[in-house]
Image (tube, rainbow, N blue to C red; front, side, top):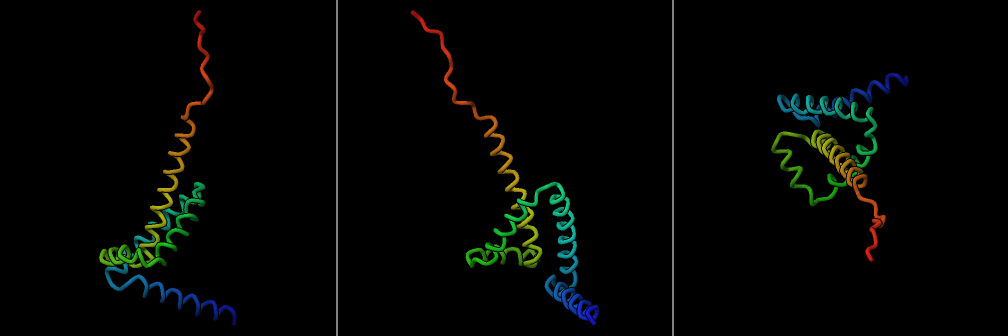
Length: 124
């Protein structure tokens, strides 16, 4: 009984995903992009970048909810990307941006000179 319920839910989820990705040629474009991004995200998470992806996921959700960013979504729709594919792209790009910012911050923090006073020879 439970197996049938899980099967029905799985089929409905797959149909909803297919409907969300569009039809025809655009379906394949979006599906290929999602598969490629999923593989890249999985590799990055295995490298220990999960904190960047969590932060970027939260920011992406906020971007998709706030009405001020609707022009961004409209632009992506003109590029034949559905919201799901656009969310994957935004999450991936933001995660790498946050990692870059943190590395630059750590580099500048390490290169910052110490504030110890220099010893100078006293002249008479």
